[in-house]
Image (tube, rainbow, N blue to C red; front, side, top):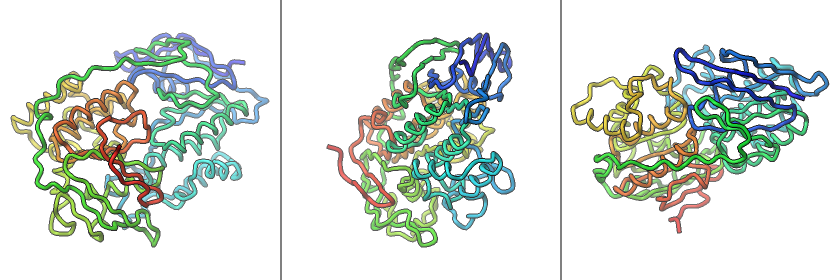
Length: 479
């Protein structure tokens, strides 16, 4: 029995055709994956099905009145967008570490309570979902304090608790560690066993067993019946000349932590971390969701106020020795999901890349001639030159992330902090970026790379630090 029947569906944004004459059906209880390169129209299609995008053509959804699931269509977006208690999204990047402002958003527990009340949902199933995804430890945290993986879990818990007859998930594994991905797949299998219809928008290969249909979008058109999805490897262009130069190190030891700890209200988030990072090393930082990775990185980048309470040196200078946060940041190139969330929505692609010269959230200064030349070189290298004057937010998510990656490397810093840099990128873009990291590493840059997928890492990694429950589980060179 078809639950979704689409015929000749098209979506236009101005003069641009995003989807063109799509026709297909999805039967009740099926599991489907829609694949395609970044910008192929996957998210637009899901929004059209969810009633969030205007379209032409026919789109019919037929719910089963006999089903125990709710006669609803629900879309889990790739990002979780939330507001503070006053109803706005005016957050800043360091705010999640500033516990003087702990009451600016509601807690996770309160968010779930309100969601359950609004949708008249039974708490028993919620408790099962919380246990399955190991989510109880963040229930008392505020929305802006949790990591991208924990935000994704919140979206997934709410969607599965709602139990709609048609569930669509955009980028279902974003930010999730290996264990959480496996548990999610089991939950999705259980959902379809109950008669739910599942559509995933994903290029990932670690899929639940319930998936039995594969389709691919290419340039807004549907290619049906493809059981595999392989995007050809994109060749890497010659590096811009400035990225071939060795960074200007001022010290051999970039990071030195001795028994570093961070705690909130007596609860340790990090405990007794001893870590040395020297010039030219390339570190992989891993750990389950909530293990303390983001907090550790916030000490490195100078964003966490408790850095001053620890025995810690950055770039050879003891924290609290008089250096400013900008003295630290000028030596670091950073990309993270949180930085992307809070980035200036009014910035163009060119302004976004150029802001990396000044570590600003958007471009507020005039560029020197040499900086303009460097910027043009990088825009062309990343194939973003033709969209340089477009707003960053109008690009597909994958290209937005590539632009911010360009921002990260534009000043050829001593240290690259790449916190889940490929989140939102398709397979080709992920391989392309990791090839880029490998190429840049040859100039001697120091790297800290956070990545959950073992198959989606650069090959240049020389050392590995693994955290578990805020403590060091593994700290060794890579064999």
